[in-house]
Image (cartoon, rainbow, N blue to C red; front, side):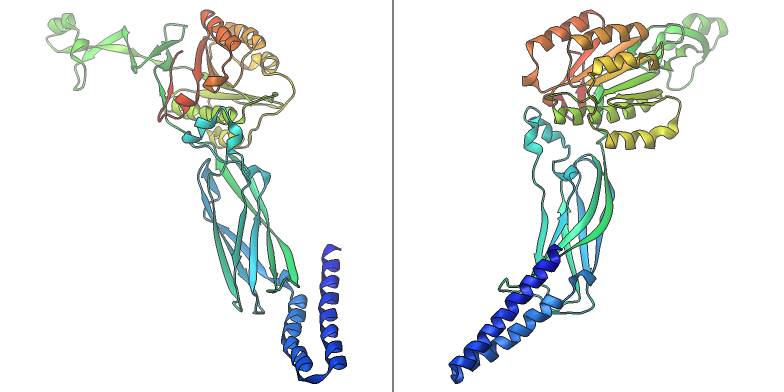
Length: 421
């Protein structure tokens, strides 16, 4: 309807100008009047041709350099226009109609300096290019999307505008072109001061940097190149007349459950939440490389659980963490209490959240009863940590909860330093 009204208005205006000049030449007469009329005829014919020229028949395609990237990376797009009738055009404006999911910057470590003011990373991203096609049949326009944020982004359409040099005739058409751009959360190196592990003979969790527990001797064997000098069992060496070394009990990996708080709340810091998702991916990758079996539990409006012992879930975990957003109306501590049955006895729980309160403290007390160890990674801007939160952190630490606070200072480092507070 809108296009029909625009077409009718343009047609009436052009015909009116032509009739006006013709009437002027007829009534005025003389060389000058007719000269003006005949000089206007080519322009009149061009405008009529442009008015009836069907730009909707153009063949428009989009090509992206990558369809799967990491958050904060860039992607190059190329719009290709092919037309069968090379009608001369003065200008052509191509605009990529971007989804709202691309109206913010992606995660770079330097962006965390703005954690206290996350609104600075929101901006109006426009992709609009102007070209002067003349009579070319094929046109190409390239653009780049920088700092693509985490998420599943759907490019759906391209708007093309053209018109005459005077602005009498303007034509516009939206071409339906669908492409998917997936930006996975960043996986960053993490420096853990200690590695989570447990001995086969003990039931409590321990932290150690060694792959072997040198306090528990399980047997002896002949010396092999690479064995430490301190491992030599001198009594057995003298008895058997061979160099014998102690054989230590190999540590077994500990089951770890990573819990991500994805519950929405008033005044939630979106950049801190992005950091918690990034840390979740990085922690799962880091602990997985230590032959540790890792599970994931995300708690929001919907609770999603990825059990351990299933390596085929890696793609599912990545896709879930790519699309996850804060949702729900219930507070996280209440939702966590409802899901405690999924935290099996003996697990080490690593919980990532962006806020704590007295309800959180109560849920940690219950969680600690079901787990060997509870490690909480609290992600907040340094200047936004209140006195009440400082008190809660100290109380949780005194009750045996391993509290670790990550601010913009730690998140901007490479690797990220995850140390005890």
